[in-house]
Image 1 (cartoon, rainbow, N blue to C red):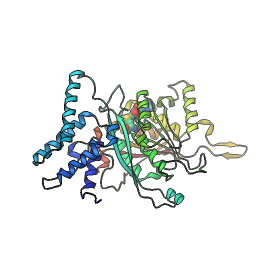
Image 2: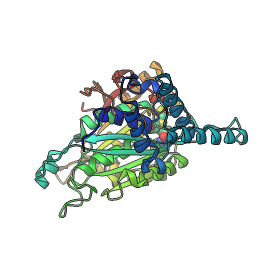
Image 3: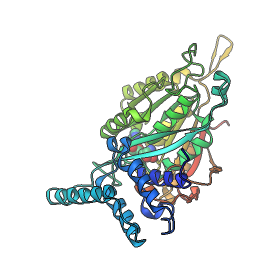
Image 4: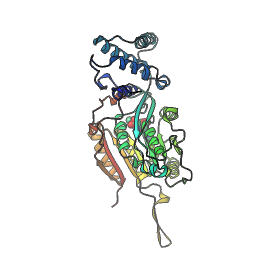
Length: 406
Ligand SMILES: C[S@@+](CC[C@H](N)C(=O)[O-])C[C@H]1O[C@@H](n2cnc3c(N)ncnc32)[C@H](O)[C@@H]1O
């Protein structure tokens, strides 16, 4: 059967809905001369009856706004609105007014599922291994996330803009994480982690991400360790990683672990915590360290820089290069670290740079160099930009940190 000519644009609508985008960020509403009946049929089939949205629905308040907008636009074009759409709108309206009478106005809005669609370009590695002519296939990232900036005393229960732009950049540069052992600091609820895990699985070419037989246990087997300090954030991250729609059950090595950067400060914490942290870093032995929106407050800079120094400059004392029996025994491998930094206060960013440099870190600011013509990751509260808002630099800076070689 022939596909409707507007299918691509309607699919973009579905993606905007999934990402909780505001109506201003959708493609323009079609004129009355367009196939509005076809659009309604698409919305009914691909949104109302979509099993993914039944299992992982956007918040009722978002849905209510969305359908109100659709109905208003259709009526403005004298188009008869389908019963399925009206019926859903009325039931959302009724349940919203019932919950408004029972819920306290001081409670934050309830969390919402949010789904992002993305495609990974096939790796040359998977092409070689499988002899397949693969095309980018679409995957999704689905998260339950908070709708407020701070909830329960943490900023970690939602995804921040810096993560969205970092994710776009990683899609353009998958080699940064694809076959690597990756550690993410301050992972929050797992948006970036789910993307990285998806990129790593794609390296093996199988739809379910399982490893090719014979892969060794260290060499090119990727691993990913997501870390955060906050127990509610870690619990939400666990839940999100486990959603079956994220397709990560067969990732070769994906773990979520508590990590408090203050354990890295030499004179703040008893030495057993620092030793435990050193043991943890030795165990996961990352090649690459990543983090998004971690430089958000000057009070956390000492511990953030301490943990970066511990990972990049003096990984753990016993592993530093040594001169043993007339030979130089190599120290730990060189690691690299990429941060997406949202600069809210110039002074906080300047202090971060100064502390990093005096701690023996080399800091480089790099251009985002993303050759996209559209945003892949849409919506999501703070990220309420339109499809074509590509001013990545205004979202965050891309910073590369490594050990300074004198
Ligand atoms: C602004 S949020 C960013 C979350 C996520 N990376 C994102 O971009 O959506 C900062 C994160 O850093 C974590 N964090 C703050 N202080 C920390 C510490 N001392 N140790 C470990 N994580 C910390 C918070 O729990 C929170 O998840």
